[in-house]
Each structure stands twice: as C-alpha cells, then as structure tokens.
Image (cartoon, rainbow, N blue to C red):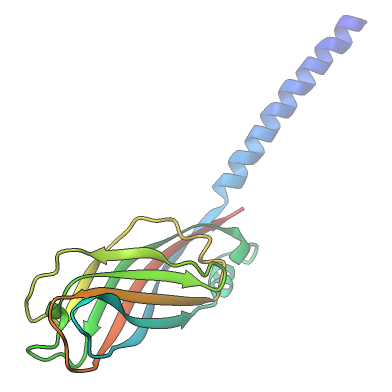
Length: 184
C-alpha cells in the first residue's frame, strides 16, 4: 500500500510540475505589440556658443494605459514587458545657411519620465558633417526603456557639441517613434 501511495505522489508531483510549466508558457504567449507610436514635439535652440552643452528640452504626454487597453482590455501600463525607441528625427523649420544642424559636430537625445527622472541617452550622432542640414536622423541606442514608460509624462533633452556659434533661435520639430510590448 505504501508503494501505491508513493507512486501516486510521484505521479502527482510530475503532473503538477508539467501543469505549472504549461501555465508559464501560456502566460508568456499572452503578449501584444502596441502599434508603433509617434511623438511629435516642437523645440527651440537658442543661439549657442562653441562647446558641448544642453541645447533644448521638450516634453510630451501620452496615455500609454489607454493605448494598451485599446489593444487588449485585460492589460494596462503595469503590464509593459518592453519599450524601445525605434527612430529619432529632428527637423529645423527656420534654418539658414549659417545656422543649421551643420553647426553641431555631435548631438545626443536623452529621455526621462515622471516614473524615472534620471536621463538615459536614447540616440546619438558623433560625426555630424559640416553641411547645410535642416534634418537629422539620429542613430538610436538599443536600450530597454520599460521602467521609463510606466509614466504618462516624458521629457526629452537635446545636447550638442557646437562647432561654430549660432546667432538665431532655431525652431525645430522632433519626431520620435517607439514600440511597446505588453503581456501577463
């Protein structure tokens, strides 16, 4: 009789471990990719002296909880598994022959949020040519940002190394695309 109970106990343990492993697979399979979102924000770069400094900040608010719930009502902002920046494009609307992106030899874009106020660099350009440029497509860093995206309020910081002083307040538009994956 003791052998029967031990055998049944062993079968129960094996069945339970298989069942729990299957639950984790099901839980991992329940994940959704939110369609890529685009942030468009205006920014201004005041006249700059030669050197490396922060040249602009801009803020953006987005209700990620609503975006996630639109795709799956069972999920929300607390279910973000991954968040990454896909692209960063900066465009100047009032550039001139001498005051344009060619005045900057390098730049980087940082991100902070109300959930995580420490800036992290999300994109950078280290070898910008000295040419009359009104648009920059900045190389994106492949960093995980899910801790930043548990928020509805984001601040972007543009820092640059100025190779020659600018004299005009440059008006620009930042277009930033990001992707979010949410799941149980």
